[in-house]
Amino acid sequence: MPPKSASRTTLAVPSKKQPRKKQPVPLEERLKRLFASLCAQIEGGHFTNAVRTCNKILRLHPVDTDALQTKLFLLLQTEQYDTALSLIADSTSGAGPDYTFEEAYAMYRLHREVEAAPALGKIKGSRRDHRGVLHLEAQLNYRQGSYQSSLDLYNELLETAEPQSEEYSDILTNLTASQKHLDFINTGFLHALDALPSSIASTIETSPPPSVQPTAHLASASAALNQQNPDDSAIVNKVKKVRMKRVPKGVVPGVTPAPDPERWLKKSERSSFGSSGRKRRGAGGATQGVVLENTLAQSHSGKSTGGGGTSHTKGKKKK
Image (cartoon, rainbow, N blue to C red; front, side, top):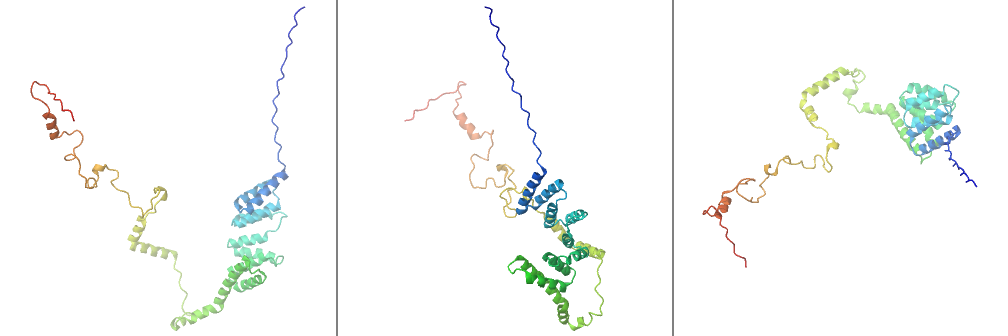
């Protein structure tokens, strides 16, 4: 029988699996995660990072009113009033929420009272009972010198505030300041005039107001004063502040004693060398390579003069 031919077996090569592409996260899920991070950052007091999170949300959803309002609140909390005004100007261009109160508050904090007063007047009719509006109006009146109006508003706020709250103590402080200014305008300055001598009080109404010295005159006077006292300026210039980065560890400037100025010299060359009271060995502090006379005499005493040779003597054994 003819031999059977061996059948060839082929091994199946496993095919490499292609990596699956990650599906993009839906917009709603991304916004949900960002708002969760935003809430955690605000609760933790991380306002700077919270503003960045608001920017991320607004890049994904530019018309999100919650993100806009939160960012505006954070900008006012971090005292970025110019940025807050820019955000208000951009958000009020369309049919968005009304940020007139925030605008008036930012202008007040920037000492722009002339612009803050009309903005506050727009919302006084619609938000008259709003405590924030009353506080802002009282502060604005106080800064503009209307102490009686400020005092009336603070009395109104004090009646409705809780006695144990922080707002109550703030209102009481501002109320006291308004009352003191009002008392000085009404009666305080009159008592101060009565306390003056009659010679001065009689000439106050007829004497001209004090002249304001120009800045050039003040500059020349200060320069002349500096020329009269040159030693003081020299002393100030000599005193330099010690850089703590260059001070070694454990050293207190002005307290730790100064290091020995001879620490870089050899000990034998220092002025304190040999002052300890010890007797030095040898004569005259001989250095290496000098042969003393008595040493030579001792070495020659053991040599013999005869025969040109040396005599070797055996020593006695020690008992």
